[in-house]
Length: 352
Ligand code: SF4
Image (cartoon, rainbow, N blue to C red):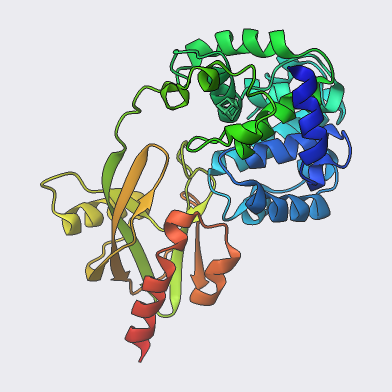
């Protein structure tokens, strides 16, 4: 089966910028970007990154702000944070040379079993699997495996199956399986009539494709009612750098506070801003914000516009006063960025 799959891959493989050579830095960068992001989107980001940071040494010397800015729009900023940490570690610990083996690669920030397997097999021809969601789906159908693919404890079973199929060219074999999942063995309506392994596929042969892969239902996303504080001083807006560990760490945005059921937002905002920034404020106006869906939670924000009479200057949390036109220069996560047209409309309205 491995031969049919590799022959098919050799014919159809897409011409992607990170496939021009086996440079581990380029493969690592592309793999991190491809997590939860479509190939078409990644191409532009990857090209820009490689232009600005052509080697791991260039990237390791970058600031977090610059990397976040370049990453803007790709989402999942923990990837960008770990990208920089990993580059620094590769330079400091390994003199800029990526380790070859999967286990050592997995000790680096942001590199899990899949990415380690991809780098190790594609860049270094090591015979190890690289199992992503596409591979799990293909293998699940190929062998009619009824274990839920979204339970990591089951992945060792898929690992064994992939290794049993891999005979030669490990990097290409892993990419062929992923490509098959992405282009042919798709989640809905797989194109079995053009599939190079349909003869061996148990789900296809037994007409049970829709039974696989098996998944357990993921828990419901948590809904968060959020107050976003847009603090204004004349034409200046206050931005805050989020220091707390988590989703938005290291990114710029607006002060925000969660509003629990039954709480009065204005009171919560006053207390929050007094405690965090030592300012006594009153809310000028409010506006329903744009909802944002993260992986595990949903923000349902309301924008609260607040003017203050005296500019505050703080070292912690780090803040900055910027003009509306300068907000775009900051690395703002999409959850805040999508509020900007509303903020702009409010400010224009105020000044007219
Ligand atoms: Fe997927 Fe169909 Fe190929 Fe089986 S035959 S691996 S279900 S595309």
